[in-house]
Image 1 (tube, rainbow, N blue to C red):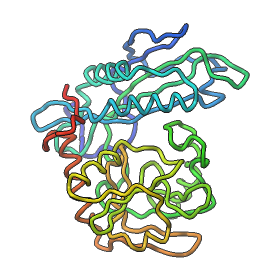
Image 2: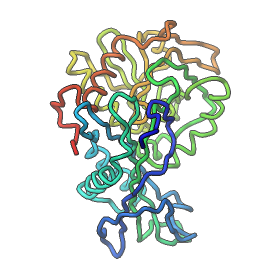
Image 3: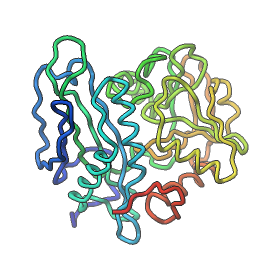
Image 4: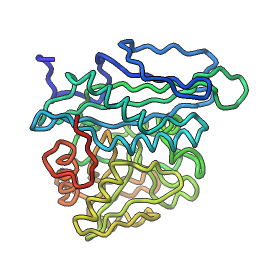
Length: 338
């Protein structure tokens, strides 16, 4: 890894040494297995291929100034994967097994954790799939849990610089009472057409509206949306938004900074009153928004013209990334040090 230019990494896949696997058979989970193969063998009638029995997570490990590796909030990811499993009737992996697998895969691939100060991190991707062969629509009786890792740079090319997003009423990311609140691949497949169209038009992502009435803000493509108004941190509440662990962390930090946190329906018109807006998630951390363009109504909501993040987003970003890398104290117990 000596010749690696860590600062130039994109958010993509790079082969690492090992992944960790675990199988659910005969009503119970087996032992963790280590593999150096990037290939998985599955039956052509596996439920993950036909009926979408598939859930995944995303979390990161960071190298600190002290040379130690820190993993951010993995217990929360383990609990969220259990919620996804309940949502699409898969076997629930114990959180302890999830954590054990994450620790194991990071230790086995420690040489791929990017150095402190490079702006890069080790992305950890846990995956749970239905392996059992079914032709009828019903849950599988066998499952596979797998965790692989890959070093990544920023999710959006701009990194922590403002980017533009758009709203398009002709697309929904999820149904009102569908799978929007759980982390399954189908939600992301549903966002691809609108996402590609937005990129063709020069936008970083789509800010989706609520799928029922198209009156309220929902998710921002692959991330949650939040905004700053005065001393208030405002983020949408809806039946189709994935509960982001990053957003949950930012709400806690905002509260501890003396801000009022409001999680509630946010009408489109309120965009005109926000001083700062951003999208947030594991991959993006915080990506400030310079403007939101409503393509159907021909309106633009501009938050900054200086191409600089706002003061509150900057403070939150520095605090969160500081905790992740060990530069700031972690009073919440969010970080696991290897």
